[in-house]
Amino acid sequence: DLSDPHGTHRTCLKAIIKACDLCRDDDWFANTEVWMYRGAWQEWPIYQVEMAGLGPLQLVLVGTALELGAFLFEIPTGVVADAWSRKGSVVVGFLNIGVAFVISGLNPLFEIIAVLSFGWGIGWTFISGAKEAWLADEVGVEVSAGLMRKGARLGSMGSFVGIVLAVVIGSVQINYPVVLSGVLFALWGVISVILMPETNFQPSNSAQGRGQ
Image 1: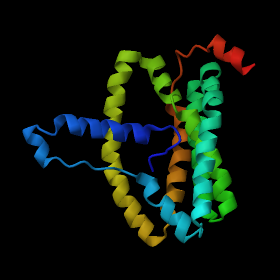
Image 2 (image 1 turned 90 degrees about the vertical axis):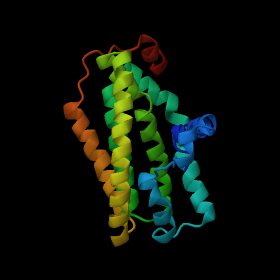
Image 3 (image 1 turned 45 degrees about the vertical axis):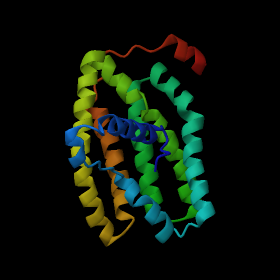
Image 4 (image 1 turned 30 degrees about the vertical axis):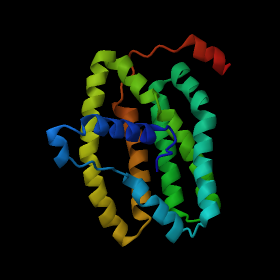
């Protein structure tokens, strides 16, 4: 779970642990609880084992494919965002992940899951950094920092709702939350095409040069 494509899960966990260590002697800390959210990842390994029947080696290979896709395409997709369109990069990423989730959830076969995990890793790299850069372009760095904090708080609230829905839906069929997550990712990509403005983007000449 900590080895997500863009490494933020591990980084966030280290930050939480460090914050807890710094506050451990404060009076209020004794009554503090830390909750970790897994989202669609809650059902993903269960689906891979129970429905797809993946063995230990196959699970490792699927995880390796995901990491490999993210590693190999982090720089190329960054060039796409800087030279072509940050909005476009985010949209491609959401659609990519959505399609990968839906097809994987509907086809519990090792070969399909492994290939689409590689594609899923690529999809994350299209979003990684491009979303934050797009927001900074549109509203400025200082305003974007506040909006990202607000978005993180709203995301945390949505996470609790997602946990409940995942448990309820997963109790009917374990692959349903995976498929639904894919549909929502793809839908958000379509919504982003309509609602995301891109008025202040300036293509990077250096990125265009690297792309050529």
